[in-house]
Image (cartoon, rainbow over the protein chains, first blue to last red):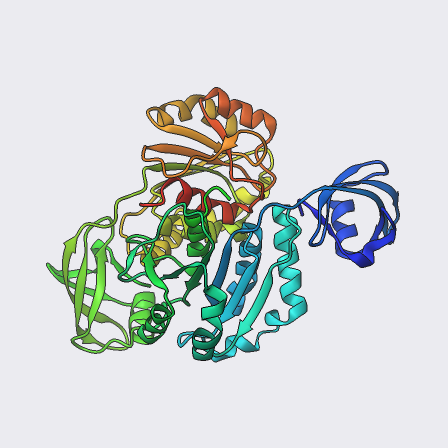
Length: 238
Length: 238
């Protein structure tokens, strides 16, 4: 928790917040906070600044806050990701949020097992919690938007063209295609398949929607490794 | 397992191997291999090619192999990594191997908990197994070299200067320093601290050894996310 992220309901005065639960626990046990201590504070979807501990008990902590600077610039990226298996999903959401991804579509694909859609980790509050952990890690406040799309074809045919218009369109595919570009500086929509990759039909549908196949070199990476590699390669300076 | 990696003891003839255990299980259950099927095969620390299944039973599989092409080029990188907690260590070793890192030093640091050095995952055979999983994933055959260094100061003072001579020397540090360079094309030694970072003394010692502090932008990443980001940023085309 490199940043304490506040929400509206934490405020008990114009510049005063009261925290309990997980945040209190972290602040007292990891930061070992005492009265008067300064902490790095941010407002969810708002500014970042600092706060001073003004009262502390076993049940809650009160902090006087001053919010000063905007959060880091979002990546100019819309990420379309074949739904990973539940065990990986949690980590992937945290990775992506900490990397600055602000729009994520979790999409079905032939090689996504149907049971993956049943995981409780896809519930709105669970996704929110994982994103919050990513923001706290990255010192960012801007919550990503996550969309779930359980049907590949209607999404790619009906919704994607508008969503991806005016952006560079890439699909990461280990076989064929060109080398993924490096250090581009333009709005991009990037599609990444499941372990084992999109099937040929899916790659064809994405190509029909204007997506260009790109690869990452001779090594085949797990989705979890490929994600930060792709983001860093496209937007190294962001 | 995108590649079946052979070892000397698998050979029962000049071009014939017999496999059992985990590899047999994977080949029969995931590849659903039948007699005559072609598989992608590589020799540990050797060439990559293909193999044809010539016999198959519950206890073993025999494959006629032909090894043709060298493995992918290694990254020109020596990575010095503060020992991660055991839970993360396994994943990190697999990540790094699949990214093409061939020399890794696991180093002590002030913020590394002493107990981390007790984990069975640091035993030679366990590290070998994790690297093997990384190679199988990445379609690579060249086993990384991993060194364990439990004392920071003697390593940095006595061993590191020779090891890092003639290389670009970088220490990833979230605070201060310059932005990490992009797409460099030279042998590099990169040091990465533990969660929470190297302490000032350690950064100073590394700087005295010629290491330059570099950061990855405004967001603070977990070691696990920062690793592929750094590798991809330094060597996007490898």
